[in-house]
Each structure stands twice: as structure tokens, then as C-alpha cells.
Length: 128
Image (cartoon, rainbow, N blue to C red; front, side, top):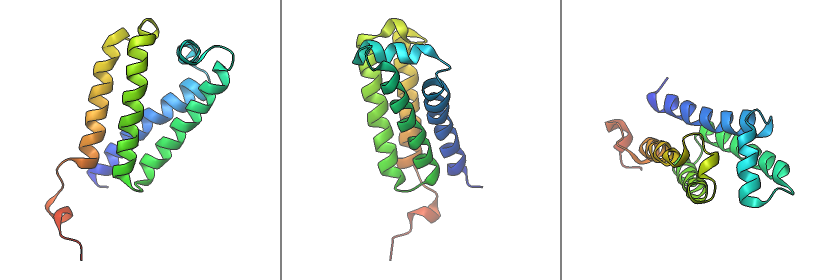
């Protein structure tokens, strides 16, 4: 199995765990509290589940490898947007407070590297 596939599996696992376990199944109530604080408590549960489903779909997109550079760009935009909001609005609910931003930056860098980083020589062939 190629190395890039393993990277995709690791990235997809993050989306799957956070989406399915933390949000859809509600195993980490803090996620719904974050959504409630940002979007309001009236529909926080529904929004949390919808966000979780979107994260599960992101995991499948990552695994598919389809238009992977578009996928990586979408992931980076989503992670950046989410973390900027959380950094300013709900730092007290984050697992590591504002320090979460460091992990987000590292994850975004890893995603960027898997999609846009150096390629093996055989990948650099000009397309016919």
C-alpha cells in the first residue's frame, strides 16, 4: 500500500471519530455545548448532528482520493474557520483552551503536505 494512502486513512480517522463518535452519537457533550454557544441552544443538538454527518462525509471524501487537492483545500478552510470561531468565542470549552489552535495548525499543515507536498519522481511526469 502506498504511503499516501496511510496518510489519508489517518486524516479520515480524525474526521470520522470527531463526526460520528463525538457529534452524531454524542459521546463528547462538549461538542454540542460549543455549537450551542456559537449557534444558539435552540437547535444545538440538530446542528451538532448535522455537523457530525458532514464530518463523516468528509472522511469518506478523504478516503476516496477523488479530487484530493480540492478535498484538502476544503478541509483546511473548514478547520481554519471552526478554530478561529472557537478560539475567540468558546476557548473555555476547548480541550486544551486556546492551545487547541496549535494542534489545528499542525493538522492543517499535514493535510496540506499530503495534497501539495513533494511527489515521488514517477508522479512528476508530464501528462500526455
